[in-house]
Image 1 (tube, rainbow, N blue to C red):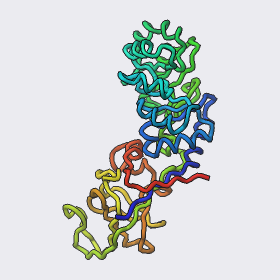
Image 2 (image 1 turned 90 degrees about the vertical axis):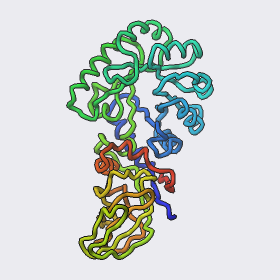
Image 3 (image 1 turned 45 degrees about the vertical axis):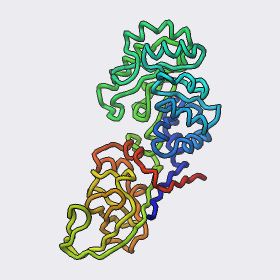
Image 4 (image 1 turned 120 degrees about the vertical axis):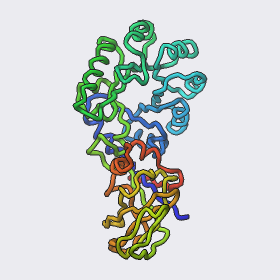
Length: 345
């Protein structure tokens, strides 16, 4: 079957990083977890290094090990999940910096790798990862004697600038860290956009680098071109696809395109999304199936050979809204069957 092409514009990625970097006086790192949000952490990180990025964040030690092999010994690679059981050799051999999340992890790390760098994650109200204030108070003196590389926390509602949780977490973070001679980090993409009070010493943009909300000024990074397998005439009253979900209201031209939910085109999008044949908007029709989707190309200026699902005409967040999800899920769901093409000047 013909293969769809996922194009990743590395120049756009770097433009987004530079734009977010310019919004603060802090050092700007980059989050490349989940294989660079599905776009290839190796290629993404190497491109970002050309822009001067020398600190990366990943979700787990295994991701960090793979990234280390791609980028070499120079960058700092931080692990959000900290020092999990069985990770000591990998953390040591691959020069990873765990963000320790609990007293259990602190004990594990200091016993196994007493001289190895680490940071500490603090819980300021999200109740996901990190030491709560009483736990931090109990171990703070011990930790400070060991010289952590970073104290960090994570904002729960940064995508909503007016949410009262943002200043509440900011206050909690300052209360737990003010006066300590350690670099601090609170902000991912949304936090950067909240302003300088949230920036501290290091910011950690993630989804904004890849063109996702809440960074509304982001340059699109990803485009998806899907080949047309066949175009047929469908008479008024005839149906298309599983379950007879779409009935032609007029004599129509219907294209079948070579992608589906196995490629990360979420089935719940249904008929809420269009594709583009050059500048012509063409509705997706009927059910999205595993490998194929019906498209009404009756009004296209010319019979298409390919259609654009994602790109200049339609963002990841447009697709996400149609599917009742978020841009993160769209990006990280992009299937491995796509032919991937990287653009860079």
